[in-house]
Image (cartoon, rainbow, N blue to C red; front, side):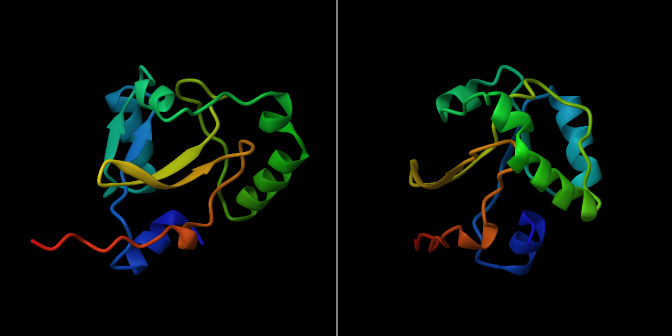
Length: 128
């Protein structure tokens, strides 16, 4: 199940903020096609990527058998690789930040490694 479907069908799902490696126009163009309502910031300097410890993948993490298998599965759903923005070797990451703390994270093992979005913990909203 993809993130957009999970977020839109689960009212208590945490608010999502995407961070793109491109400039503002590139990042907005990318999300305008995929999820126009998404909250997005451009981080072409990749400061946030460094702050969260996102690392670059090696050869096997970028084009190894696991990546090919994920690519075939994505293509069967109509998803294809587009024009790269920023550093295409940066591995994906997803973080749930609550009260200024990372309370859940997924650091990709390879370029095609996506988290199970339904496993993201639900955070009770603060009262008051």
